[in-house]
Amino acid sequence: MSTIVIGLSLGMLLFLLASGLTLIFGMLGVINFAHGALYMLGAYLSVDLMQRSGSFVIGIVGATLVVALVGIAMERFALRQLYHRTHFYQLILTFGFILVISEAVKMTWGMGYKEAVMPAVLSGAISMLGSTIPTYRLFVIAFGALVSGALFLALERSTFGMLVRAASSDGEMVRTLGLPAASIRTAVFGLGAGLAGLAGAIAAPLFPVEPGMAGNVIIDCFVVVILGGLGNIRGVVAAALLIGLVRAFAYTFMPSWVDIVTFALLIITLLTRPQGLFSRSLRSA
Image (cartoon, rainbow, N blue to C red; front, side, top):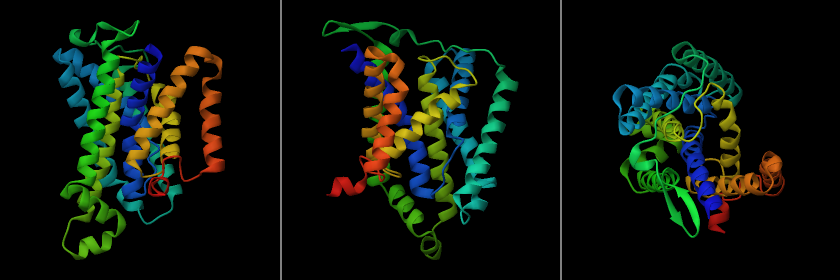
């Protein structure tokens, strides 16, 4: 049971991170290679704010908002100029943002490890089906499910979601109708960046916060996005849970094969279903 809970909590963390990446790509067509750096920034900010305020909630909310503002600045002053160019230019620019954010983190917080203080109410454990389950793992699962539901409602059942889909499919028509297409795109990028910061803040009490964490997680993030189907939020939920469970069971029964199993799943998917295991075409079939 504990392995399943660990897998589900890891899957929900991957969802929080990958949902922002697939949202930015699906709505804007931008491959944000700096997404892992934003995740790292969110983790460092949350630790800092938690230590200064003594509040877990302030740490999470503050880190999410600050990283969202950083994302808005990235889109407004840099990426907006590259929408009509190939993805190559976007990759180069966002790789540059990785270097800038990483150096800023090192200059501000140093090279050492940071550790977030877990709130007392979430620091215990409960017994479930003969296993001892950390309370924080259950919180991550519930929180991820709540965010996924809110994100689905925002994109599929709200006026904002309708405007986002319209701006992503035909920005010129949206501008002709007098709607702020550029502002909508900026809001989407800020939302995606904020989700990365939120994932970092939620992950901070579970994993060491250090400069290398950006590179450690971004590969799994891209695996989830590819398996879920580019631009497919529902697919990302399913793919994140799948990868989380696969890695949890691999860590338990064959730890030296964790990365091999993950990449084997990715390769098989690319060879047999390159549009993703949970792509829209699969759901509509």
